[in-house]
Amino acid sequence: MNNHSSSSSSTSDFILLGLSTNPWMQKPLFGIFIIMYLVTVMGNVLIILVIRSDSRLHTPMYFFLSNLSFMDICFTTVIVPKMLVNFLSETKTISYVGCLVQMYFFMALGNTDSYLLASMAIDRLVAICNPLHYDVVMRPQRCLLMLLGSCTISHLHALFRVLLMSRLSFCASHVIKHFFCDTQPVLKLSCSDTSSSQIVVMTETLAVIVTPFLCILFSYMRIIVTVLRIPSAAGKWKAFSTCGSHLTVVVLFYGSIIYVYFRPLSMYSVVKDRVATVMYTVVTPMMNPFIYSLRNKDMKRGLRKLMGKVHL
Image (cartoon, rainbow, N blue to C red; front, side, top):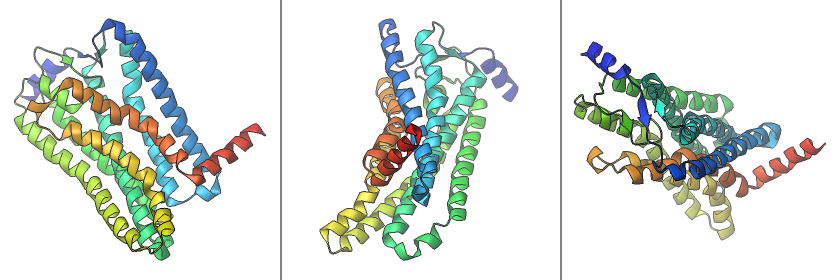
């Protein structure tokens, strides 16, 4: 079985249809996405530099934020450059191995993102609900462990998924109706029986994506209960304003992911899916720096400080 599958699948490349098959749209789309990509990279690099250069930002929240920014740079780099090349090329192919590699890093980095968002929610929970023990609970060693745990779980998940995909065989069509190698569009091309793979993918995705999501949900329920107990309106606002930017990112990120991945393959619509996927692969990583820096006094101060250093 396995010999057969690897020989039939590796003989030819996949073709990525991209966002639009309209030839007139390729250059405008290239323009839009290269700008978005550059903004993403520069914005997230700036966040990392600001956090590193300002000692007052050397706290758990910003430790996680700088790692989130780094993951976002890698995450979009897995998808967007290949997509940009395809906008301008005639062939739009990706090799079988290239496809699996892209799928691996897309999943590993995307899941690390969601675990980091969960770590940030836990950080806010401790800061608001248990402020006196904050330094003990969120000590640097523990934050580092949370980061390593996030990366390890996510990479194991991605490895398991890609090994599963590599066992499938592909027959006639090698056209992936998407702008990168995502699980669902590739599963649709396989002529192996994918029903068992789909069940495994669904349950395992549920476990990996829902765990951090529930963690975030639980943290915010606790936070809301605590904030509502604060007597003054100003105190309530102050406590909750520290969560605003994180909550915005969570809604953007998870809203589109739940829309794409938690529907059966039969309900899978290419066009709607591409739009939702662009949301969390390109738009959210691009928005993160704005959401975090514009709503945040400490980040603004750090940014001014960094600019001052640069001008000297």
